[in-house]
Image (tube, one colour):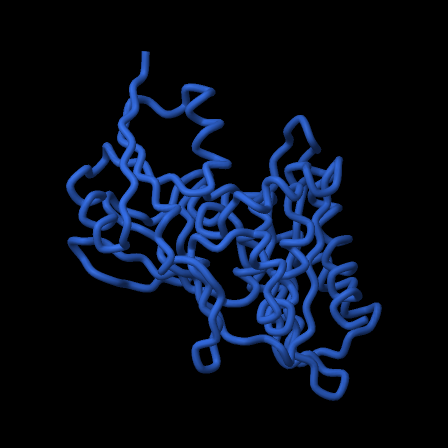
Length: 283
C-alpha cells in the first residue's frame, strides 16, 4: 500500500528549501484537482506531498509596468473575477469562463494547469497567444524565466527540474488588441477539448499588423501556429485570406485519433476554429 507524508510550508522560501531537500520524492499540491485523482488511480506512488496552498505571495493578479503578473496559485475563478484580466487579457478571461465547472474553477490554479502539461489545457492556450513567460524558482538555482512556448516537452512533461517551483506567469498587456478563445468539446465546458484555439490580433486600418495563434489538443504539446501567424501579418481580413490561413494552419498540427475524434476530423476542425476565432476577435 502506498504511503504519503504531508508537509505544509508557510513561506515560499521554506517551500523551496523543502523541495530542494526532498528532490524527486517531493510532489507539489495546491488545488489538487490533478494530484488527488492521480493518487486515487495509483498513478503516483509513495512520496511527500508538499502543500503550497498557503503561500499568499504566489496568489493574485498584478500590473507591473506594461505587463501582467499572475501568481501561480491564483485560481481560475479568481482570474475570471479579475477586472485586470477582463481588461488586459480578454482571451484568457474567455478561457476561464469556459473552464470546467464552478467547483473546479474555485480549486484549480493557473500554475497547476500549466505544470500538468496537458496538450488540451484550456488555461495554457490563451497564455501562449499572449506571449507569456513562466517564472521558475528553486533553492539551488534561484529565479529564472522561460517562454511558455518552450516550457512543454511532451504530454505531462515540462522543462522543470527536481526542486523547481513555478511562482508566476507573466505577459504583456493586450488591451489594445483583438482576441478570442474557442473550445470545441463534446460536452462544452466539462469536456476535455477536441481542439481549442486562442487568437490575439493587432489590427491597424483593417490590416493585421500582429497575429498570435495558439492551439491545444492538436499535437503532443500546446503550440503556436507560427507559419499561419507570419502569413496573416500585413494581410487584410477577407474570404481569400481566411481560406489560405485555414489551409496553412492544418500543416502545423499533429493530431491523433482517439475515442473523442479522428485525426481527419481534428484536421478539418482546426481550419474551422481558426475562421471562427478570427471572426469572433474582430466582431
